[in-house]
Length: 286
Image (cartoon, rainbow, N blue to C red; front, side):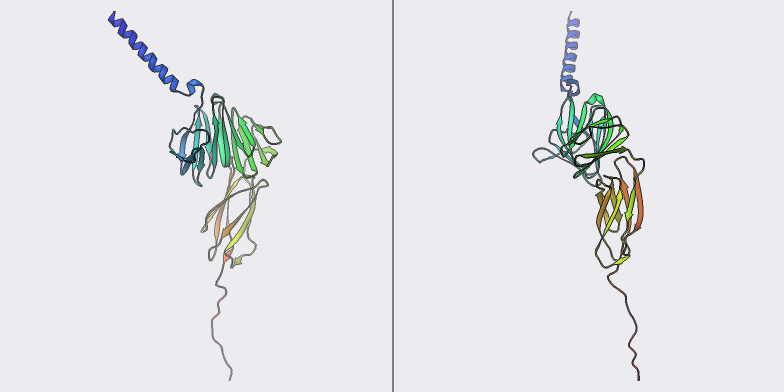
C-alpha cells in the first residue's frame, strides 16, 4: 500500500512540475515573445523610459523598445520557431506590440528582411502611416524619409496607407509618400556614376552624383574613409566628398535590399593647391 501511495505522490509531483512549466511557456498559452536571436557588431536597445536594455541573445523585447544598429552591425529578432526579422546596418526598429495574433513594428529608418511563417502569427511593419502585413511570406523593406521600398520573394504581402493594396510574389513596390509603382524584383543592380568633369581643382570637396535602384545603399570608399547614402525614389544619389592633396581614387559600391551588388572604381578630382612652379634666374643684357 505504501508503495502505491509513493508512486501516486511521484506522479502528482511530476504533473505539478509539468503544469508549472506549461504556464511559464508563452507559446503554450498562445502568446508570442519577440526575442533577440543574433547580434553582429554594435547593437543597442532602449526601453520606453529611454534606458538601455542589455543586448544579448535571448533578450525579450517589450512594446516601445527601440532596437538600433550601427554602420557595420546587424540584429536578428525571432518569433516562434521559424519567423525571423533581420535588421540591417544603420537601421532603427521600434516594437509597437506583441500578442498572440500578430507583432507590430515601426521601421523608423533603414532596412530589414523578414521570414514570416503562419505558426507565429502575422507580422506588421509600419513607416510614416504606411503599413506592410505578412502572414506567410519572405519580404524586404527599405525606409528613408518619404521613400519606402517593399519587395516579396516568397508569398504575397498586404499594404495599407498607400494607393496599392498588395505586392505579389516576385514583385517590388517603390513608394514615394503614398504613391506606389509596382515592378518585378530585380535580378541585377544599376549603378551609373557621373564623375566630376574638371580633372584638377584647389577645392577641398567635390560633388559625386549618379543613379542606381531606388532605395539602394551607395557606399564610397577611399582615402576619404567611407561615406554612404541611399538612392532616392527616382534612383538618384549625390554625395559631397572631401578631397586629399593629390589623386583621389575611390571604389563605389551599390547594394539593394535583395542582395544585388554593383561596384565601380574610379578617380575623383586631383586636388592641387601648390600650382605650377618655376625655376631659373633673370638675365640682363649689356
